[in-house]
Length: 471
Image 1 (cartoon, rainbow, N blue to C red):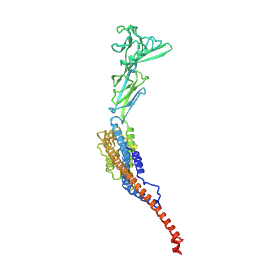
Image 2 (cartoon, one colour):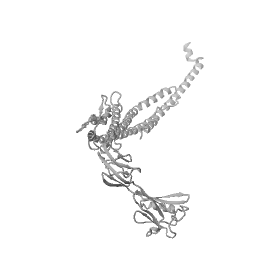
Image 3 (cartoon, rainbow, N blue to C red):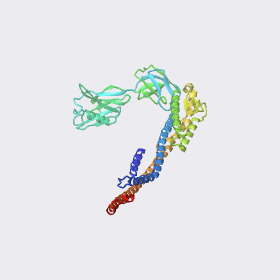
Image 4 (cartoon, helix red, strand yellow):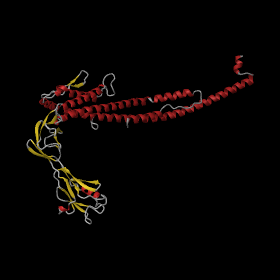
């Protein structure tokens, strides 16, 4: 149950248990009401104690949730650092603007490559029906009585069977696309009629035909618009091909971009080298996440400490942050300080970007070794932070869940106590009302007796007893 729902229910049941009031008729009704009010206040003392405990648990759960988010941000920032060793701190440049290159994945390594002799680009074959039809939904396209056509897309003929209902351009388009034959069919609508067109899904010299007789190419209904080709070029003097002008897999971790302006005689030198900027960016993001968590933890200590003051998990996270900040490695870069990171007297982390940007390629390599990945180096500590922040199995989530369960248990106790108090107050109110009625009746009888005595005094003595005694 949410905190707001718990508070709403508690408020409703507390209303049931408020002091009962009644309209008294005796002169003692206000005193009796005071008794009821005081009784209700005394009865609410244990309820208020439980509500105080419940509020503490709810505050703890809220603070734990905030802490969980901060720890998660730092874990993610450290994990991002760990991805740099798999190519993130490398950059690719090309000597020719017509042959672009970018580092795009794992496996990239520093080196120089030559791309030359680009003889063709990746192009997909396409073909269009020689003759259009008047109506794509009704005009028959297969021979009457046969309703069968044969699709050739670079291989053996594939039978396309139509029915009397689908022997039209719309039905043919749907049947070809359902055949998964390596081509995609669409319909062109022009002033001269509707035409089926097909485009190969992959680049290459795919011959596209649509025959009425599988053994007779002369029965073809299509004309080739263009015959496709593979991208063909040489890398370091060795021949290579690609089905896309976005070439991957030739140079590990690098994507080449061949554009239509690429000339056969052009040659490009692709240089993959260390790039310090991603390291600096990742360090600054990490420092921001570290400082946010440091600030959050700081609110749980001192005279104005929050609900987690003294919580052992907070102390454990603080210890882990210290372990991370002063992590010691081996090699050319042995600490975060070697990467331009400093921590002032308040515990705030800052980054000097000029340190990493001034590093040589060898120093960048040492920096990446120190950073490591998910299982080595300082980046391996990301999993330690995740052990606390994981929204399902993390230590913080376990405490949040436990606090919420405990708060609900207290709410159940509060509800039960309020019901009992309300019932007891109702019984007490009934008794007080009866007593008030009895007092009112006695007061009425007293007034009647007083009047009777005064009447007898007048009759016997000609004056009231009070007047006679006074005379």
